[in-house]
Image (tube, rainbow, N blue to C red; front, side, top):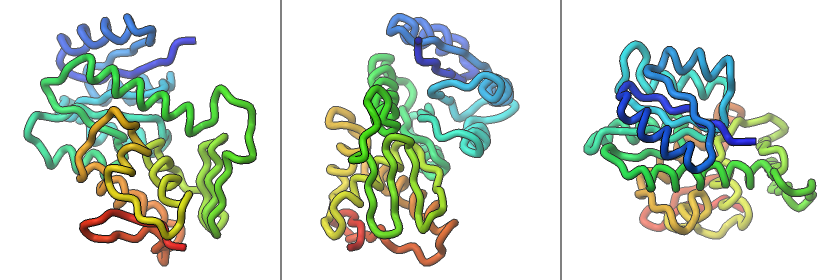
Length: 232
């Protein structure tokens, strides 16, 4: 069964050209011309992944991202203007998994989509038999890879695929420092490059999510100029 991708942009040329490219790769594509239409469509007919433009009429991509994150942790890529760093950082802090700057290469977008969907399957343990080894326990932290489930002190924390993989990369070796390049490889794969701000934004959002259930959470430690570590 084909994986389903929602493509949301008010530029009909982008919707048409990207849809053709994705369908050629075997994906089913549902297109929406604004955020309001997309929210209604995705809510009634869930998809495996969404690609959102930021600047759209009626409901922009930021609001749509925020509304979607209330009900789903599916991978989301957002499209941003060439030099708009504010949009990039805000989108990541709100829970986007990745971003691509316009104008973009369709091949690059397709590779990012493939990578995110592949990581989603790995994080959820799809395609493999249940394996007790997929569960990582570090004190109050439990990461269940087979169910893509994270709990802290028995309370469930909804994480995106990127956030889940970052926590796992840090917690698998408590006390050991991971630099940003190592965290990029863990979350995005060795052939995808994202800048340092992307990792920093994900870490900030992770801490915020854990602090919702435990205001004293301090397990993820920053070593300035070096990277991050999960405290022993």
